Length: 454
Image 1 (cartoon, helix red, strand yellow):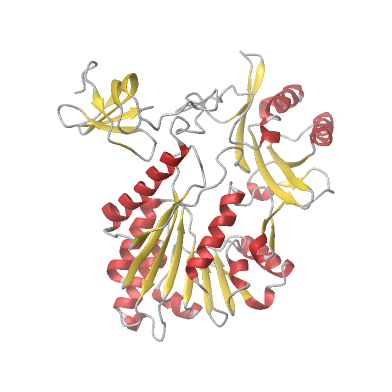
Image 2: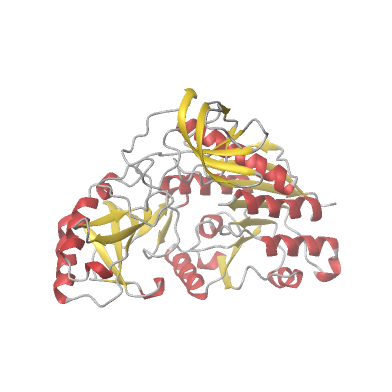
């Protein structure tokens, strides 16, 4: 058990940005607010057989990478956990997390670690879900992220990771909701920012649990006109979202290196960091190294974030996604960009795949895989089964190269283990992507090559 006067030396950070130390008994101690290399005292709040967790109460040796958090709400708001850590050091930790997961979970070591993809570290968040609470006891409305480890909404008047124009809108939004008749039945506002030729387009999706009054609708229109935002209303699930009033520019993001424009709805999944997404697409396509006569499959294709740029380079790209509605949107985006003749799309459950499904989709020389946090286990297992027992996939040829884009290093490592140890691939390159600066979230990219004789 850790004594209150025992100085601990922090060795590393975990996936929750907690310092990791060991006490005199050798037990692991997770320390909120501590950084690698620091010596700290800890107030332990939780004790288990194999570990303890607590908060730093005193600091004797400070890390050279400790910085003053830019946001006055750091420590209260749960949106960021690493603002006290130099951003370069944050990226180095994420790269190490990727390496450690690949080795410890997948027993895979990349032949080369790629330079991390980095970009804007402030004002980068073009998507956000803001909680709304009318707090009667305080006599005011709160709008923002939840407090750390709490269901309460942080009392914040600005946010450093939101674009400046949106950060400046938080207090006016609070006043708007406070004046509305339905203020007690408005749980959240989802933000989506797109690009237009003359600037940014900001959409605000208001979740309302009851129909809005005519006066409330007029209040929203007046606010939208004053602050230059689009209001969308969401009475139930994401599929029920509707624009309050027509007119104005469409939400879209661009991939200028490929001449591609991607329209989207504010509840569609798009990356929160447009600058990093553009860099990621460029990196992925360079690593895939598609030739003009090649056929490519884009698994978990979404709106076509990788499919359409790939179609500017390949002979044909097949995009596969789990939703019929999303596939329809992908087809529309392909048509808008003049790429229908080089793309095909299909909808199916990507968490239930067998070798026979690989045969049905046909062989392709290159794959792009971009799954959600759950990873692509069924896909990787289908490949492994097809390689180990070719009779399950007659005539099918595994892709020579796979570029795997991941938002969860643990599931990437799991799938990498299957590809390397059972399907004959080598992990030739891997690297971190700093999509969410100041958070512990780790995005990454990995490249798998397979010898024709394997």
